Each structure stands twice: as C-alpha cells, then as structure tokens.
Amino acid sequence: MKRMIAKLGVTSVLLIAMSMGAQAKEKVYKLKLATTWGQTAHPLIDAPIKMAKMVEEMSNGQIKIKVHSANKHKSPLGVFDMVKGGQYDMGHTASYFYKGKDINTLPFTTMPFGMTAPEQYSWFYYGGGLELMQKAYKKHGILAYPGGNTGVQMGGWFRKEIKTIDDFKGLKMRIPGFSGEILAKLGVLVTNIAPGELYTSLERGTIDALEFVGPALDIKMGFQKIAPYYYTGWHEPGAECQYFVNEKVFNKLPKNLQSILVTAMRVTAFDMYIENYHMSAIALNKMITDQPNIKIKTLPTEVMDKMKSVNKELRVEMAKKSPLLKEVFESQEKYQTKARAWTEMSDYLYLKDNL
Image 1: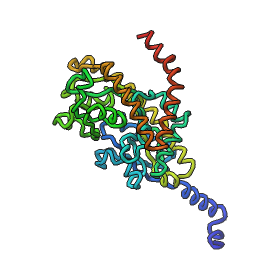
Image 2 (image 1 turned 90 degrees about the horizontal axis):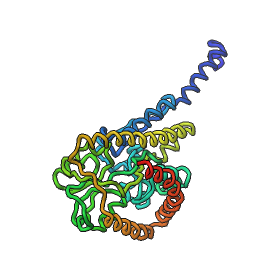
Image 3 (image 1 turned 45 degrees about the vertical axis):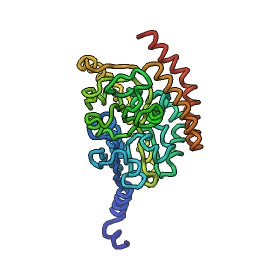
Image 4 (image 1 turned 30 degrees about the horizontal axis):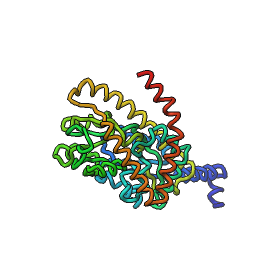
C-alpha cells in the first residue's frame, strides 16, 4: 500500500478509493415480476410496466424490474405461488383469486355491495386496511400493496336475459371472489377462468355468462358477439388489484430503494384507476354508437334483494372460519358506514340533481 501511495500519490489513491466506494453503493438489483394479465390487457398490464419504468428512473438504474405477462409465464392464476415460492420477486394480480389458498386474502380486492374505489383507497391508506392486508399475507412471506382499481365493474355478459331468480339456476358463469359464492347459493355453476381463456370458453359453451371488468376491457374481448345482455354492477364496486413483493427480496433492498418501490407502486395504482376511468368513458360512448345489438340491463329489484340477503348470510357464515377475516369484515363495514354518508352527500346527491 505504501509503495502504491508513493507511486500514485495520495490524491490519486483517494480518488480510486472514492470511485470504488461509489461503485459499491450503486449495486443494481434485478427483479422479475409476474402478472395475471395478458400483454394486451390494458390498463391492467400498464400499471406494472409503468411502475417498473418509474422505479428504474427514480433509483437511477439501481432497480431494474423485468415484467412478464401471462403470455410469458403461462400461469395467470399462479402469481401468488410464484412470488411466495421465490420464482418471481414480485407480482401484479387480484387478491380474491386466491381465496382457495387462504380465505383471508378474499376481501382485499373488493366485496359485493361494498366500498367504492375512493372509499376503499381511504380505508387502505387511512383506515387501517393496508395494515390488515399485510397481516393476512405475512405468513406467506409476501408484502401486498394496492395495485390499481377498476372502479365499479359491470355485472357481466349473459346469453339470455335475467328476469327472475330462477333464471340463475343451472347457469354456468365465470365470476371470481365472494360474488361467486353468492351466485352459487342461487343455483349458478360458478367457475374461475383466466382472462385469456374467457372468449373461447363463452364461444364453445363451456360457460353461459361471465363478468370481466367494464367497457374499456370488455368490448375489445368481443363478448357481445355471443352474449349481448350486459348487466350493470353490484358485485365489484371498487375492484383493487394487488402488487405482491417477496418479503425476503424487499428486505434486501436498502431503505431508500424500498421507499422508491413503495412510492412507485402507490402512484401507478392510482394512475391505473384514472386510466381505466378514461378508457371506460370513451369505450361506453363508442359502444352506444357502434354496438346497437348490446342490451344494457340492470338486474330486477327482486333479484338484487335476494342477492343482498344471501350476501349478509354468507358474510356471517364465512367470518366464523377465521378471526382475521372477521376483523377485516368488521373494519370494512365500519369504515364504509362512516365514509358512505360523505359519498352520498358529495357524489350521489350531486349526480341525482344534475343528471
């Protein structure tokens, strides 16, 4: 060392040392993210892509996230297992797809007759919802964050009109989450099919009806060619996607990079919500003009009342299965009651008087 200092000089050695230190601090973390969505499922696929770009820019290249759509990894409903098992570092999906693996994951996407998107975001970030979601995923070694909301989803596409409760009996329908449990009680044969297989399943008669998202995504899928009855929503009033992060991977990141990742997920989640709102507004106007064969319907009052009744019964029944699920249900119900008074005054009464 003395010989090197004598040869190069103290200043040169210090510059080399500083350079080496800077390189050590600029370690690059390469992560992989799996999505449930196909590469053309906009805006669902847009959220993780934008998030990856934002993270790389904000971290000055220290985090590079490679996003794999379902077309790449071929397991759209396997995101939970892939992130938990470490095959992927991150995921972008919907929590309610995994109720069969852990019933506590169910309510973090949405619940029938539950909170709207603004109410739900308020609950997540200011009403304890995010903490409860982390609590649910903790035992799986996953950190979960809001990943983008679709707002109120449409009630689905049906080959035949629903006039009474009896029209549900024997109907084969793709509908995930708690709403599937409700319809199953009414005689519907419920199935959960990955988004990329929906049109083919409808076309081949594997299912008679399906729900997906709303005009922005649905019209591009072509469901109206087979099932022209398009029902307004009840089952997903504020459907939130989730970002998953493998906890061990997250903990290896320096604190500043953790903050960058969490911030980018939050920003792109909200961006997906407003992008979907814009796309649905444009698509609905175009649909009304260009697709006169589509019959937009609202389920009869008799049907809605029955579904609300079954919903209440099932919630009580299901809450008995898990203390954590009961805690989440109670938290959501309490917050919804508190927030709904303002939602009614600020949104409903304004729209009621101005439509």
